[in-house]
Amino acid sequence: MSNPISETNDTLPITVAAFYRFVAVPNFEAFREGFESVLDQHDVKGSVLLASEGINGTIAGPRAGIDAFFDHVRSFDEFKEVDIKLSYCEKQPFRRRRVRLKREIVTMGVEGIDPNRSVGTYVDPQDWNDLIRDPDVIVIDTRNDYEISIGTFERAQNPNTESFREFPEYVDENLDPAKQKKIAMFCTGGIRCEKSTALLKQKGFDEVYHLKGGILKYLETVPEEESLWRGDCFVFDNRVSVGHGLAEGKHVMCYACGWPVSEQEQQHEDYQAGVQCPNCVNEISEERKRRFAERQSMWERQGYER
Image 1 (tube, rainbow, N blue to C red):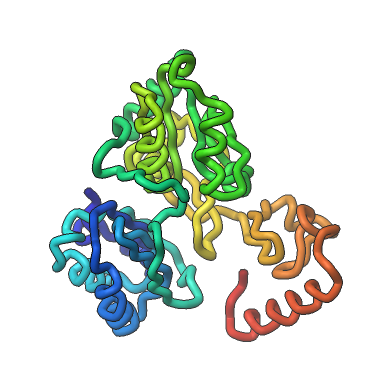
Image 2 (image 1 turned 135 degrees about the horizontal axis):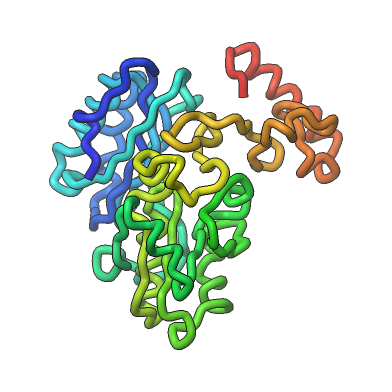
C-alpha cells in the first residue's frame, strides 16, 4: 500500500494521487457530501467515484490538501487500506472537482465479478520483466485503444477496445483456458486488472497474473535502461501522458475526439488546439468545430493551456 504521508517532492507544487479500493460499501452514498466538503476546503480537484464495490479516483492539489483528504478517507474502516499512487506536476491538471455515485468504480458491466473473492496473482514491478519475457506467457494490455496508441509493453497484445465494457467480449472471442495457460495483464494503475483477472478466474483460467500497482508503479520504480515499456503512459487528467520516473509527457488531448496527440502530430496542418487533430479532422462537422473553437477560446482566457 502506498502511503501519501511518506512520499514528497520539493520541486513540483502539485501532488497527483491516483487511488482505489475494492471493498463492500453498501452505504456508499453517505460518503459523498463529506468527501466533497474536504476536497473543496483544501482546494483539491479531480474525480472520485463511489459505488457499492468500493472507491476509485484521481485528485490533485497542494500536498497538505491531499494529505487532509486521505486522512479523512482513512478515518473510515471501509477505506483504511485504500491503495494510493503519487506523482507530481507543475500545474493543476484538473479543471473541477467531482464526486460521483456509480454502479461500478470501473465499469465492466458483468454481474458477479468480485476481486475480493477471486483475483489473479500480483507481480511486483521488479519481477514483471522476467514474467513477460517468458514465451509461454500471453501478455495483454487491458486498456483502451487510444491509451495503447501512445505506449505499451513489449510483446503486449492489443484487445482493440474502445471501452472497458468491451473487454469481456474480447476474452470470449480470443482466449481459451484450454489453450492459453499463462496470462499476464496490466493497466494504468491496477484497478482494471483487478476486475480482468477476476473475470478470467471465473471463466476457468488458472495461471493469471497482473502488474501490481500498474504501469504507473512500474514507470516509477523500474530504471529506464532496464525497462520493457515503450512510449508514454496515458493518464486521465490534463497532463495526458507520463513517462519513466512519472515525468510529464509531451502529448496533449484532442478535445474533439478524445485521442492523445503527439508532438509530431501537433505540428500537422490538420491540428488545431481544442478543435481537431489529424485523427478526427474529417469526422467533425463545421458546426462542432465552431463550438469547439469557442470553448478553446474560453479556456485560454481562463488560463488553461490544454
